[in-house]
Structures are given as structure tokens and as C-alpha cells.
Image (cartoon, rainbow, N blue to C red; front, side, top):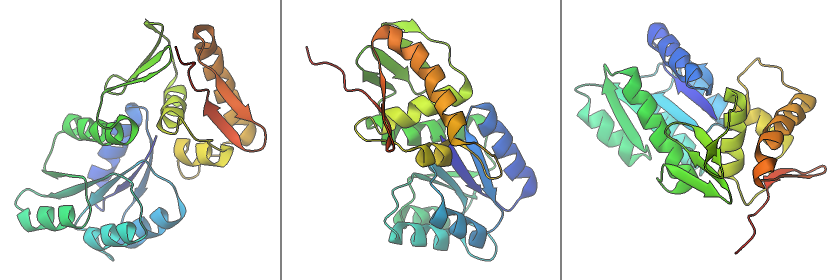
Length: 224
């Protein structure tokens, strides 16, 4: 899962990126509104963490332009503690949640998990796909009730496939959602990640299907 942090305070931005990367997310950072707007136009992100008080272009303007493009990316806005008007304006403009500064990084991580859950399972913490279950809070996958050991990148790959369980996901889409700016990941590397995840899922009857030239998808579970 890939997150864009739009925050102009270097210390806070670095802390956010470090915390989210430790949680297993790919994270990019924009230091002003113009950079954030440009990044959102050409990249795919799973969550946007948006400071309202950005220079060059306000966070509110970035958010309005994002929603005008009909993007449904979950947005968490960051505001000053007393910024009631900012919070109201942000929510009215299409933000999904807000967090007042200063805040604890643990709370921010929990809110990010909540936003990603809404997109993947309508808010449920547990996703089921045949013999596979995935706990979005603990980011733990189980096959036939037994936990399977996954790397951070394999967890992110599984999340993407579960989020799009009925659709094909191309290699380019996987690169966009798994990798940060400046990170060189080839199509061959994506094949390696898929192969490793497939080996851990298939003993339980969960298959990743490759449609040559189009992409990957989780095979639909057999109906009983």
C-alpha cells in the first residue's frame, strides 16, 4: 500500500514517513501544495495524509482539485488543534477523517488502517477469501486458520490483490502501489514477489492467477 504525505514541516514529515515505513507502507512526501497536486495527478496512492496549511497551494485547494477529478482516495487531513473551521472545510471538501496537531504517531497509524479498511472490506477488520483470512489491523494473513509468514512487501502485494479481488491488476499498477519515488523495481522483480506469495498461499488452495499480458488476480473461491 502506498501513501502520500503532504506536509511542509520537515521534522514532522520525516517522523510520519519513518513511522509509516516501519508499519510496512511505501511512502512518498510532498513539501508543498503544488508538489502534492502534481503527484496526485500522475501517481496512484492508497491514502493521502494532507496538511491543510501547505505553502504554494493550500491543502484545501489540493483536496478540492483531487475530488474534482473524481478520485476516491481516502484522505486524512492534518490541522492545528484549534482549527475547527479548517476541519469543517476539509470534511465538506471531501476529506474522510482529520487529526489535530499535535498527535501521537500511534493514533495516526490507527486512522490510516481504518481508512484502508473502508476501501477493502467496508470497514470490517477481517477479510475472507476462500481459505484465506486477512486481519487488516494486525496485517496478519491466515490460510485454513494457520498464520503464514509474509515479508512487508508480500503483505502489501496481498492487500492490493484483496482490494481488487474481482479485477486484474497489471504489473504497472503493482509497481505504482508498492514502490516509492526513486525506487527502481522491474517487472521481473514483481514476478518474484508474486511467485513468493503464491508459494505461501497455494498449499491452502488460494491461487494467484496470471493472465498473460494483462496482470494478476486472486482466483475466486469455489462455491460450496
